[in-house]
Image (tube, rainbow, N blue to C red; front, side, top):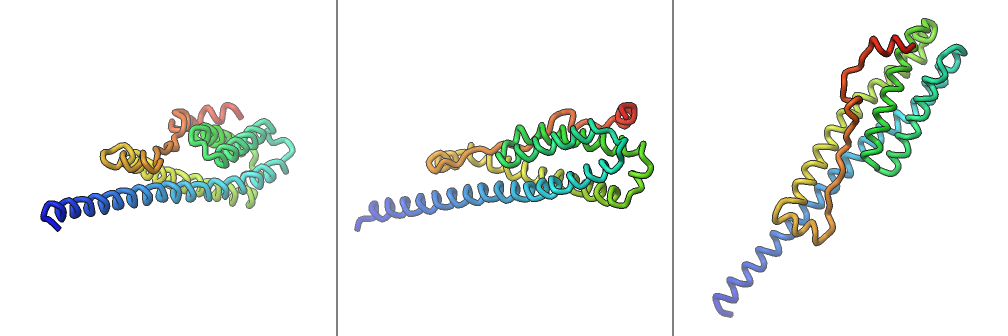
Length: 192
């Protein structure tokens, strides 16, 4: 075997190992995004399961504003549908509507001292607030994993391997501008 053949073989072996390394890196990124989504999905499902309990506690107070409860129920259904379809754009909008509905529900509850002091209501409110914080944390991790994935599938030479094996960009989980804005507590209380 000649020296040029050995050099060619050596270059081919290095190129194959480099390609394998790039492929494995992209696989890792794909699974990191999936794991980050699964973490959000678990929290969304937990919150999804808690909301009917909160609505039921509020319904026990006959005079409680039904339109507020209806908005929470509708927004919950939108979040569920978007979550099931893994539609990040729809999920962002539905999350905004749900959070607005919950904010309104908690603000309206202030006008009902019996409800506000109800132990079940207080526990559910605390549980949902904790889930909201956890979802925000996981959303940050998800978006970070998606961003790393999206950068890698566009960078050379990763883009070659990504195109060859159909690794593509993923959608960020973004919320509407109203969702990001500070809550106007005065406006919430004026509506109640």
